[in-house]
Image (cartoon, rainbow, N blue to C red; front, side, top):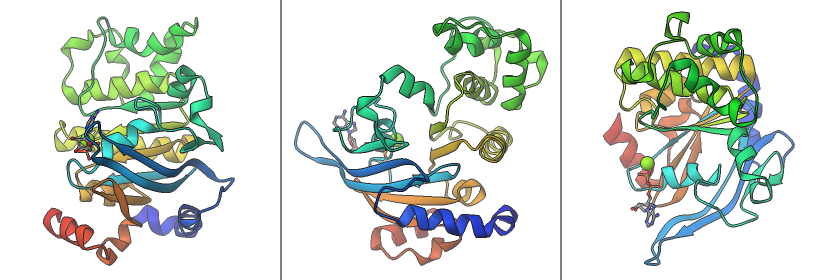
Amino acid sequence: MENFQADGEQRQYLLLEVNENGHSPDSKIQVRDLSKVSDKDVSILSKVNVDIPKGVIMGIIGPSGSGKSTFLRALNRLWEPPSGSVFLDGIDICNLDVLSLRRKVGMLFQLPALFEGTVADNVRYGPQLKGKKLTDNEVYKLLALADLDSSFFSKPGGELSVGQAQRVALARTLANEPEVLLLDEPTSALDPIATQNIEDVLVKLKKDRGITIIIVSHSIKQIQRIADVFCLLANGEIVEILKPSQLSEAKHPMAQRFLQLSS
Ligand SMILES: Nc1ncnc2c1ncn2[C@@H]1O[C@H](COP(=O)(O)OP(=O)(O)O)[C@@H](O)[C@H]1O
Ligand SMILES: [Mg+2]
């Protein structure tokens, strides 16, 4: 939490932005009344409203089945949200070209799925789709950004540990120069050291590149380590938006119960 002290003033400001309901110039993503019902008419997301400021790490926690993944997938249209419910830099994402949206809003999942070939092939994949071939040097820089040394460059993707593969997946996403990263429990298959590597990289990406990061996590401790602010989802609704330091102030009964059981 030292970081929190160091830029406490700035975070206070950012949190005000989170709580604001109107459109705000400092929001990277705005979600307005985002709802989803299942085919059987069961509510999956219910009028979710949140502003995610530029350059913060926002955590999403909540019981399983509460809609965390569905929420995340709406933000890059892996699930198509209704128009008028998700805005990136003030623009309705439904009006954006879906492929360029997904370059701007990259995503990582619990288990990394690398393509055939070497680590470098994987990292070059995204830019290649746009007709750009990354130089070796550019690949090395992206690897370094994901905390992978140069020895990984020509390793086959299939020979890596899950933690290493997750960092390659991160480097591959970073090759698209994303402005936002969506992470769906990215460390839940990793050991504590690999988890710490990823967390360090995320904090650095936020600090050095101003990337906005939204991370679903089942670990409240992880949220406390890296998030500036977090949302608690229960039954498809955001029931709390808090700073990690305010964890104990959660008022919603479901939030209290979840927090007690998870701590
Ligand atoms: N495509 C779908 N069709 C019907 N129900 C779904 C679909 N996707 C998710 N759900 C349901 O929506 C709820 C939220 O799922 P999910 O977003 O995966 O939750 P979480 O990530 O918090 O565990 C769950 O009850 C799940 O069964
Ligand atoms: Mg999920």
